[in-house]
Length: 78
Image (cartoon, rainbow, N blue to C red; front, side, top):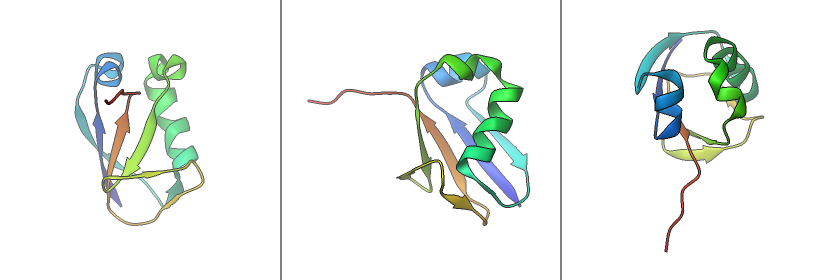
């Protein structure tokens, strides 16, 4: 399956890209993050949330369709 990975804020700076396409097998968010952190070691010291199709998910969430994955840095609202 093909995933669209979007990076925002400091995560885009850490990877030097804002978006990429990734071909992968079905996996958990945790497995995907391991792959991305191996590819972009600067992500290892960053705190961020993961959204799948614009909904926040936890690391156990199973990705088994072509989806949009967004890596979101912490943000404050008011």
